[in-house]
Image (cartoon, rainbow, N blue to C red; front, side, top):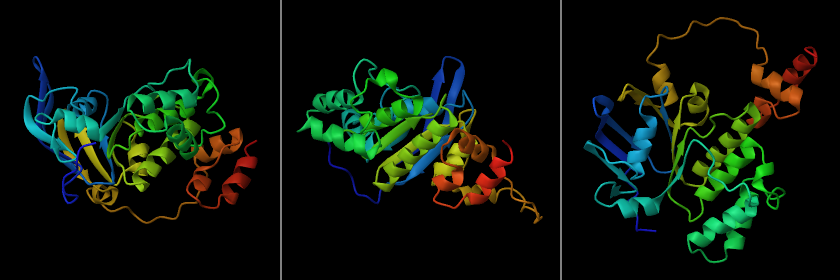
Length: 277
């Protein structure tokens, strides 16, 4: 892995990024910075240009104009150093279903020429709560387990920056919560995460900062609190707290409620859910 630049620099720096496909302008001057060890959500609808930004930052695509740097390295001038500093997880899990979960991890560790691939694999299986499933073929995994394995594979070699391109697309509610926990753990361990998503609640739950990308431009970039200040203050009204649909769903199927997931008591939600049965 290349030597990183001073930690005072942002992990990702984007300035005036432009990209067009013939007559279609996909990016029209995109600017943002991502601080080290943070989760940055690039929020936008389909076709907003989110994946194009990720492809440029991961050196898979050349920009028409502007500049970008990842981990202190210019993506155009030092592409190999950028690739050594990052990991990219696309919209669909890139795992081998014929192999077991452990075999997938060992394979990638060997490809990265790491010492003791088995130890690396076992550590990641434990970290992502996949130890019991490690000896099973990935074809038997649920969607959430496959995505967690995919993210675990992305962490082999300890890249300081990871790109997650719409990581929960197509997942059920329980699987989404599993992936959210995995993303939170990445940041807690010092990994910088750039997350693209079209789900408002996903950005709200995970991101330290959120940038809204629309028609190739960043409309706003800030913390959730800063973005909320853009709207008029809410009126204070008394509203009886009711369980959310997520509370109901997870209580009925036997999973954790949102409150339990966040370490909060949810007895009232369970009592109200019983009345629905």
